[in-house]
Figure 1 (cartoon, one colour):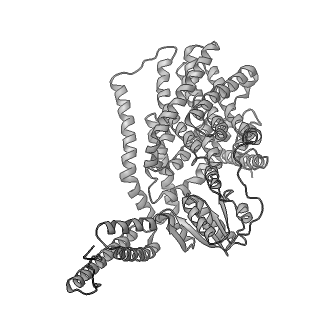
Figure 2: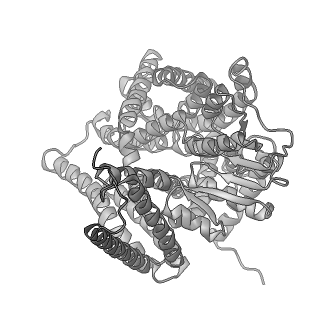
Figure 3: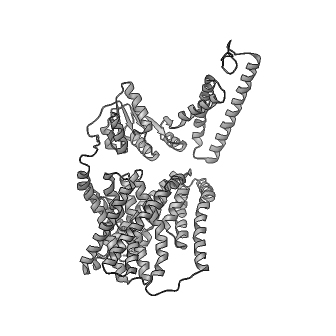
Length: 619
């Protein structure tokens, strides 16, 4: 007996099947995953074999992938780092949106369109695809770089700018509409301020205790559900008052960036983000209206070419003004020159507000979708032809290609790895050094150091670096997640390697200990301890006494860490252990000070000719 499949099950089979077939094929051809998703959407969409018809419903659902992505980006940005980006966000971001809007508006007016159509089209086309840009930056590890930070700042400003753009549309309607004034306008502004304040204050005061309470249930699937509920609730709240869902999710991520649950939130949400982003790109592919393209091919080609060329020219000059390296400008320009997913919302809202007819909206939406389709293809062309020629005669990086046989492999040659490498060189110990920061490699080479360009999270590069034969692997990279990835690779594939790992903070230290790594050094501990010794000396302690006190503190701290480690996932117990350890140290130090004072009073322990402070009476 046959039964019809439910619609959701049929759709799931279609989307997952298309993605599983198209994405690996696209990556095998060297085109990247985004092109695979877009091609899958074109194939199954209304202008392909027609397996899916309701494109707008899928697109609205899939936009949540962009929301999850912005939440995860926020988790990587502590509030202090975000505050440091305020000038790039409003400076570079404001300059990009204003300049691109002005140029595109002028082009529209010169082409014979009305000023209303030209202005709304320019405002929508000035926005770029956050989804594609951040996905490409993540795949290329560009976010920590200067070009990545500049691109992210501009994209974040665009999310903010989309709010007043939408608010402007009713005022630009060809037929004047009733616009609320006075109280209703102030009420809307008050609601917006109230929602943002609620997110900020709630993130500070409520989210951490709530997540702590949920974590105590020790039910992983409920914590995952709570993570998704958090993002969905904030997105719904922002949408309710007419704000960007992605912006709200980003703010929530920033507020939780310093939380002890940050890593667990990332782990839980990452798979959903990847799947929904893939669905979003599939929906973009399905939304391309090839009917409009067939009816007006020359106009569509002119729109897409004009968009990429005019917007690209503005962004290229902006990149020069920002001070980006010449080799970084082509990718930076292309990632921001394409249209963006928010343009779909702007143009649909403009058609609804009668700013221009639906046919114009379809034409503009098609141009945006085609620009998003062409950008990854152009990126491949830039990689294969433009950058290869562009970098000729510029700095060359020594990529590791021949097997090495040094007893030590150092991953990361920043301020930490350099000290280790210099000590090895001074002792005549050969070391193979890997780093993927081109600027750092150039600086190291100027000082005579041999550093290979390569990402140590890649198994093939570790093998070529000699990890099979080496004795020690020093993991000195800055990013804790990259550090843990390298450690996991080494533990799985090179179990004979002895690991010496730099820990950024206590959380990183605990995660390394969870993996069985015993040789862990906190990057600032020893330097901070020496600074503490110097403070004691300046307050009157003798150098010997200051050193003894610092060493005693060091031993106690190491013992305390070992006591804390079994409880690092139980916050209440962890806090109790820390408080008890601190109290014991203070009591022990107090007793020793009393004993030392008593010995000085009794004249015990003095060296003839010296006072109790370690100074000569004649000095």
